[in-house]
Length: 449
Image 1: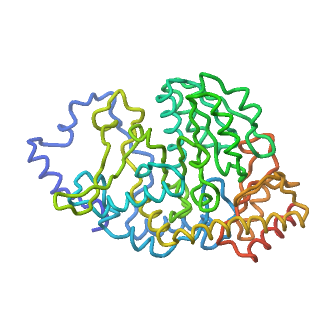
Image 2 (image 1 turned 30 degrees about the horizontal axis):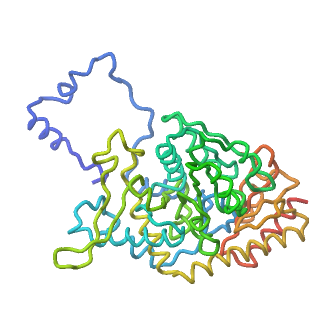
């Protein structure tokens, strides 16, 4: 058959019409007024057979700059990290990649245990007591934290650092419209949040203060100082968006007094694909466990005393909370959470710390090489695996030239920060070799002049 996924024949169509007692397709749609029916042909290409279609799609896909052929120094929220081969082997098993909601624990123990392990590892990394079973991505997890803080404190003002990912800030703005929250952005100074402005904006109407750690510029925010400022207002909550790989080395936000820690586990086992999918995480204190959006998996025992896993604390939006719910999210990214769980388990506790250290070491080597080539790194504070460099040429122009050399350059900060026009955000991960870093710096230096 020419159209493999459209196997409907004229006989099939007639059989369906006969079954429902209608003599023609025209009669079937007779209730739809003539004046709103579209009578012309759709402006679409003629359908191709399967072989032609695969050839056309392959040709289109080959125009992409993929990470098997290009060396990437692009980060800004999506990173090119080592992925153990076991990850694909596990998530390709049909019982995982076809699984949906594990409402029936008696047949879903594998899925439930995998999610439980994910929650446990996130708690260990973030320093928090409770984590949910994952969310769509880091941006929506952060916005969910903001709305939770408003509901918990009964306050409307949210202080958001401008050193947070611009797209995450945009998601917060969107979420804030429904409950009419006032989002106040705090400027950055030398790559970190302006603490003086934060002090001035903090008041008795502030529901939460939102930070990123490390922030969008790769800088490590002083969470201890920020927490001291926040605690001047008793009910104000401290929300931190954090790269979980960085937490393999940095002190976790929970140790600095964070009330909610969120982020994206793309760095563990999820490839850098255009547009996703990703996997958000949401971790918080024991006090807030009944307000957590999404799902929680708990550990229990059956009637024989055998360890088992179930969905727990389900009295939330999709069940009985209704108008009292703080969130409408009732799903999660289970397959991506599984990928992250397998990656974290495979790399191990000590391996994750070593992986984080390599990111830091290689980023610092890149910074040294930039400075030797008269490309200044503009921020002087402690950083993780991203740094901001100032170019004498437009970063977009530089990136176009770099692509002709097989290199994906950094992020053009001028797109989101007018004051940083001509600056590039460069990410250096553990899989970048010395030779790749040296080549990138040389080529960028030649363009930079």
